[in-house]
Length: 397
Image 1: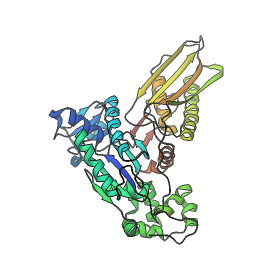
Image 2: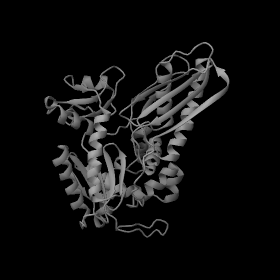
Image 3: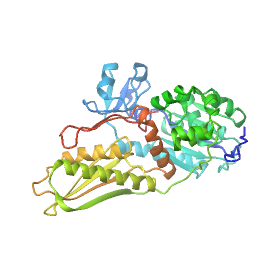
Image 4: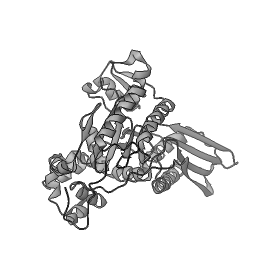
């Protein structure tokens, strides 16, 4: 497959594999606790404001899925078993899986704790086809960890990612270059990365329901209507995605803090300042391509007493809204003296990610406010909780 558009040349020579662990958190729990095997389980908090991080495949026929409020999950599946997440354990298993990847190639780009892209074009074992590399990796993972993975193989990241989702769980799907365009043409518009319900509705409003119809739209029209995302849609509709697989060196943390000219005493001003800090932190996080799951609030009072409070989540802290919401919850848990606050800061640390992945996640966080990301912001200073009822999660596929 090729494109005649000189602005968007393609490269069909690469062999890219996307490996995605199946219901990773839930599968680790079922592996480690035999009494949970074959039962519907959800990793997450069972309380009223809890969110399902991932659901086992036994829970999914009931409609339970990642990012669902725990209360709703329990209504759909009354016998659902909630299990507290164990991030340290998941990191251990993730490290074992990444070690398997590196037997085949050093071009490994982790996207989250449970998925990664691999460029196996010139793999260490001299295996000719990407499909065979993926098959062996899946077999190694199953044999050494007793967990299943799904893998997608193609000549770029976009298609490899779609392929890995195609036959879950324990799937292996290859999209060959000579069949890629017909495959893309048949995809429903909702299957394109970054197209959630709201964007799909916009597309359907202009008569676009699948990949073929998307491909009929000009670059100008797509960018006029969808901005920067339009350029991505234009290229993806033609099977073009030249992003390289980028190994990364993990960064420990990224943070932002502000010392105020005058001590802040009013809750409204503290909340507003923290939201501004969260926005600046998101810029720095995105610039450095960092993804972390631990958020730390630093607060220094007028008497120079300093306190910190942290929370670690199964979901990465990506996006200014999510950072602000979690930061405000941490702030509300600290008793602020009447003399006021001299300094506020936020930092993200923990599980890292690649720069390319972070940029993608940030861009599509904007697009996928349509894909079920729902935030509720009360009036600043009202004292009501800020929460996210739905959020895309790692570990949920």
